Amino acid sequence: MTTEELLRQLYDQTLTGNGPAVLDLTRSGLAGGIGPETLLYEALIPALEEVGARFERGDFFVPEMLIAGKAMAGALEVLRPLLAETGAESIGTVVMGTVKGDVHDIGKNLVNIMFEGAGFRVIDLGVQVAPEKFVEAVAEHQPDIVGFSAFLTTTMPMFKANIHALTKAGLRDRVIVMVGGAPVTQEYADAVGADGYAADASAAVVKAKQLIAGRRSAALPA
Image 1 (tube, one colour):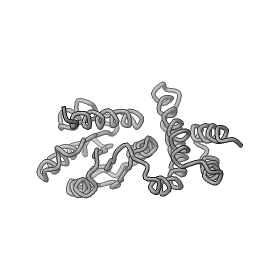
Image 2 (cartoon, helix red, strand yellow):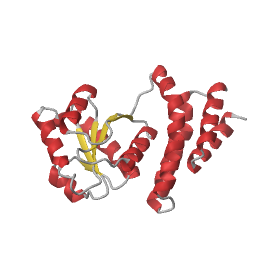
Image 3 (cartoon, one colour):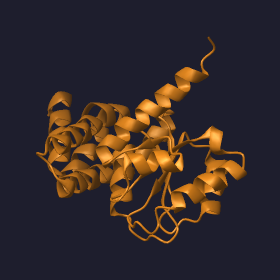
Image 4 (cartoon, one colour):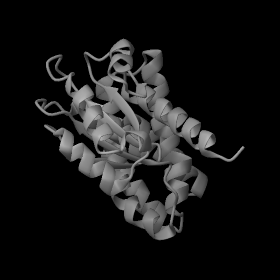
């Protein structure tokens, strides 16, 4: 099998969410001398981008996104340490968690997979994350973005509490705050003072890239 054939198969199997095949092809590619960055940037990431595009068109739904994401996550387990050895640059670092009082994580996990698939480093704090935990993680990891997820309308006020905690700790201006979850709207995100909101995992990646690019260009000397 040529490199081009293997990359095409890896792309196709990721798109359809065939986890065992994705893992086999990833290992075969590495054994055949294909670099981890090539597998990631020429097959896996383009496949997940296509999954996102199909979701936006209404051709794919959440189950298809989850299956493709899980298939890619298996490949990332193999590639992550190799990419670290090569010094591959990540797009940015994201700290993510479901807010205090909320134990829902399917949406958050899907967003995490999409972020990782796009080349971000993701630190997942899990569920029921208290404001002080977010503050500690932002201070420790110095991420580009901190993401707050809420599935319940009763836990959405924690967005504001978390932002207040970051402000009190002197960290608010150092990080981009993104919020999301089933009941969350752009209007609510604006009201609590978040920098970004996305309605789904695919849109979250696009928005995150835009926000990071905007912040980095603003930091450049005139």
